[in-house]
Length: 168
Image: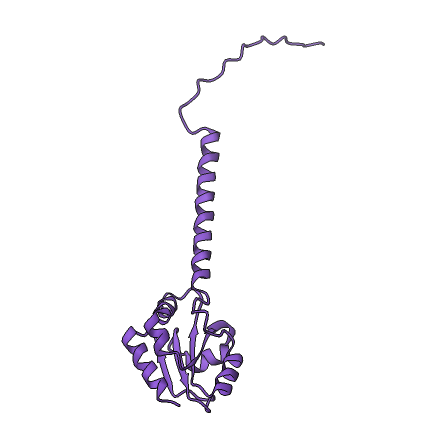
């Protein structure tokens, strides 16, 4: 028995388009969010790079090199232990870069140490945090004669310079 049923064709009518978000709008919003996030990441990376090793050019970045120069010249050694991305470290570096501070500290060999690159010194001297400033007297580069943790004011830097000048 053959039971074939003939179906009636129903004309297609598109459903009325509902008001809502179109695919193109979603893609555009996603692109805006992605671009904004990318720009934010770039800005944060640039900020970290700006605070990394931002000490003045006359500063060393290698402790042994600075120590050898201080020994050769028989000068005090000023060490700053800092950390990339540390706001207080960036502020301290800015204070040290001003002309009065550079003049006051001109008699010392200066080195800025990245705390992550010198974990032993950081653990030994910067337990209170960063930035930490150390001063070694000429001829005694084994233990510091001065230690300061935190951001130094302009006046403190100038007083430190006077103390360094008396270490000859």
